[in-house]
Length: 157
Image (cartoon, rainbow, N blue to C red):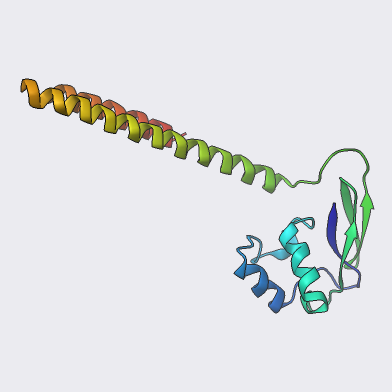
């Protein structure tokens, strides 16, 4: 795994040009780049592409190999990376929460699609039945209300 670290006293930071480059590519950490995972592929690509132009005011950014797990040690802003060994990968709690949220959102979207398909099928079946038999629309209304309640219940999870 490759990581970006600061090799100068003063602290990790990105230039305005680097922030603009990352923002154009949809990077999620533009507001607080110091909190970004240092192994972020887009951050690494930015430093590779811009070179010294990626450096913030007090930074001299460098890309280092860190194995599968790493720790960044800092003293007065100057950093060094330490290989932690093992098969673990470095991931922040924020990244875990984000990945869980993305998975839940995808599941909810799939469920909503399924509900809408069921609703369309039942509308077709019950609509045809109602039109053919002139039955009271309460059956259709009850079913649609049940589907809507189920959809809202799933959305609230």
